[in-house]
Length: 436
Ligand SMILES: [Zn+2]
Image 1 (cartoon, rainbow, N blue to C red):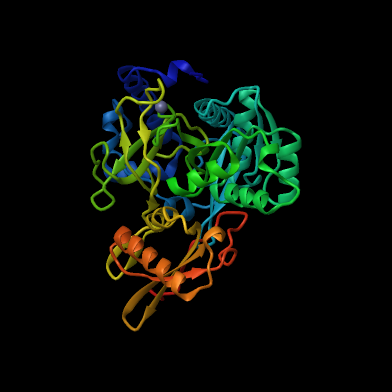
Image 2: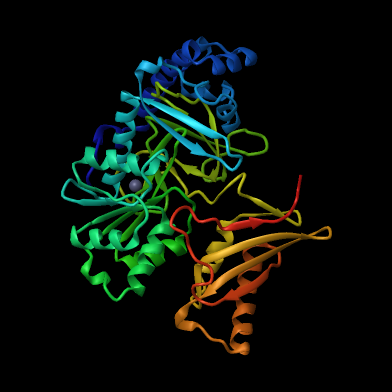
């Protein structure tokens, strides 16, 4: 088993707790002295840096939210002089207001190491040719993967997104062994190969896929693995904490968190109290070594669970998080029931007569009643235009979906190609209710 930083990745729990405690004490002192807005939060809560003596004291500290970052746009949360900042990223939200993050040289080095450790988890070495189809630019995906793969010593092909034909040509001709992109883009490329007369998957050398930046399901993962002839890994990150590389799965389902850099807590989304290992809640991160934009108890809105149990798959001792199954703010409330698009996707991708990852959810309010319509493509191999066949399949999908989400939905079966995946992050939900 290869490691990028064996000392950290296999550290005993006792040593990790000691390291996290030392780093938290230093980070809080630094933040209190340099980050005015968080110092105000601490003052309001009556907490002084001296009150934080170990990692267990983290629960005493106030939270930071995305709203805090947006309302202090652009530089309100920066904790160092601009002369120490070497990179700025920004992400846009649904409200149109940008969230800006800024990094020092050491922040960049830590992020690159975190991504390189993730690559090592997937068995990537300096021998690999890494094709990056994440977007390059303000989004952290492309450049984050790029720096991490270069630090590992891989041959990096910075393709960014778009121009499918050129992507496929470069991947095949340059002998890419590793593909980094969003899962929906991996599916898009896989289907482009299937449809093409020019490309045959047998001519590609792909063996590892590092996919992240949007939620996906086990069913979609299996489809991508089978279509692209590679082993797919989940990589997790968020630009506010660090781009991709905060955590990565090692072959078991769960993802190891680089917890010496990013300390995780899972909290009940209602009470904001910690939940036990294995129980799902909102993921909250504290950066333990950030200089440019340190964030203390940042509420990610992502829902998952964590476990400290020994990993059955590799020798890493780093805590593991489950795949993110939704976001507290992606959650749809339909007729009083919490519905996550990922639950529906899971049900759809299990049905082999469907192209289950090609779906769209449409929510409407008819009178006082909310309705959910699920449009999903039929698998071309099972496609039929016979009314009786379609009705039989529709009933099967209806049954699977209802048992997954607990409410009935209108199922609309579409011909292959009618619910296309886009090249970037694919929008899965259209909510036409006027709820404000
Ligand atoms: Zn492991």
